[in-house]
Image (tube, rainbow, N blue to C red; front, side, top):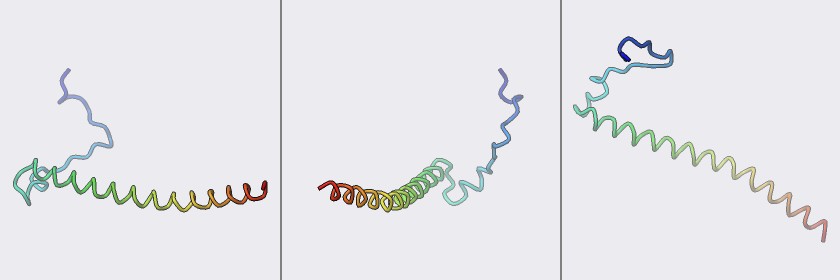
Length: 72
């Protein structure tokens, strides 16, 4: 199977590796920096999501306490 003759997916984007590794002059170091930044963004997004979910979790707990108090 010749991979060069296969058409690429429409969602595929090409990037100029010279622009990526320009600040470091090393493609592997540049990709490591990009990966670390992606992890930081992921962690920030995860913390934000957990904070929003925590708002809903606290209101559910208080409703459960109200129902328990009525039974007593």
